[in-house]
Length: 478
Image 1 (cartoon, rainbow, N blue to C red):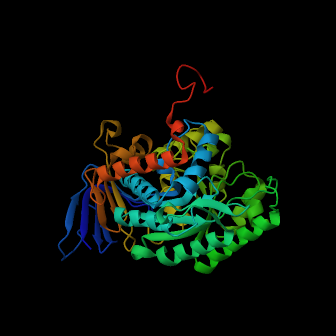
Image 2 (cartoon, rainbow, N blue to C red):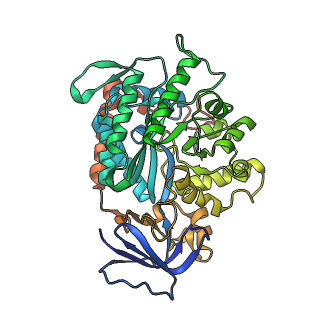
C-alpha cells in the first residue's frame, strides 16, 4: 500500500486528550497511522511517500454513520412526503420489484455520496423500515458488498429476518423464478451464509451485523402470531449473533421497547446498538445502563418528529450515544455534518438552552463515540498511531468558513459535506480535490437512474413520482 504524509493542516485527533495540532503532520504506512507530529517535530521516514498538502484544511478522523438503509438511495422522496405511502412502496420494491443490479446500484450510489461527504464508515440495514430484510437469498448482500468493495469505503451491513407471520413472499428476478415463499428458517440460514463469506472481508473493511425487528409489550400482533413466537425468533437471531461474534442492532426503539428487549427477549449487551430510541421510559434507560448497550440518535428522521431521543440525559448517565443519518430517504442525506447541526438545534430547542450539546460533543458522536457504538474504537474514530488511516480533509478556505480562527467551531456549525476535499480509507485516497478515484461518478448515477426506473415499472408505482396536491401555496399537504 502507498505511504502518505499529510502535512500543514490543523489536525483534530479526537484522541483521549482531544488534541488539536495546528500545522500538524500525519504519517501513514500500509493503511495505518504510524506517527502524528506538530509543526516543529520531524517524522523520520526512509520510504517514498505521497505528500498531501493540507494547508488551510482540517484533518479529521473519517466520519461514521451508525444507522442508514441499503435500498433507500434509490427510493428518495417517492410518494412526496407521505410516509405511509413511502413505506408501502419500499415493501413492494424491496420484496418484489428489485434485482441484484438494483442493490448494487443503490450501494454504489450511497457509497459515492458518503465519500463526497467524508463518511468513511457506514452501517446500513439491508432493507427498509425496521422489518423488510432482503435475506431470501445471498445474492442481494453479495451485490451490495461488491459495490462497496469497489468504492473502498468501510461498511457494516445489518442483515436479519422479517416479522412474522411467515412465509414472506419475494421475487428473485436474477434467477428467473416466480414469486416464492420464504420462511424464517431460510432467512436466518442466509444471514449465517452472508456472515461466513463477508464478515471481516477486505482486511476487515467489510463486516456484518445481525438485526431483528423491535417488539413492544403493547403491540398488536397479526392473527396467528403470538408474543412467544416473536420472542423465539428474536432470541434465535440474537443467539446467532453471539455465536458468530457479530454486533447486534435494532431499528425503531421507542417507549418501553428497550426494557422489553432486555427483560423479556434477552437481546441487549455491550455489543448491541439501538436506533431512534424515542420517548424512553426510566426502565428503558435503566436497561441501557445495566447492559452497556449503545444508542444511535437520528435527529433528521421522521421518528424524531414523532418522538424525542433524550440524548443529553443519556450522555449524562454515561450511555454511549452516536449520531446516525437514517438516510438516504425519504427526505434526508448522508451528510453527517448536517446531522450534527440538526442534533444540536433539536435538543437546544427542546430545553430552550443554547448551552446544550456543544459542538465538540457532536463531533465525538460521529467519530470516536460512533466507533465505540459499533465496536471499532480500537481501529477507527480518532487519529492515533496504530489506528486505521481513515482520514478526511475539510477545506476551510470557503466564504462560510472564514475567518479562519476557531476552525473546529467553524466546521461543526457552518460546514457541509461539500466542503470535504479529500477522503482516505485504510490509507487509500478515494477522493482528492473533490474528484473520486474509486468510482466512475457518471456511471454510478446512470446505473442508479436505470435501476429505480426498472423497479417502478415492475411494481406499477410510477405514479409515486408525481407531486402531491398541496405542494404549493398552502401550509400543509392536502
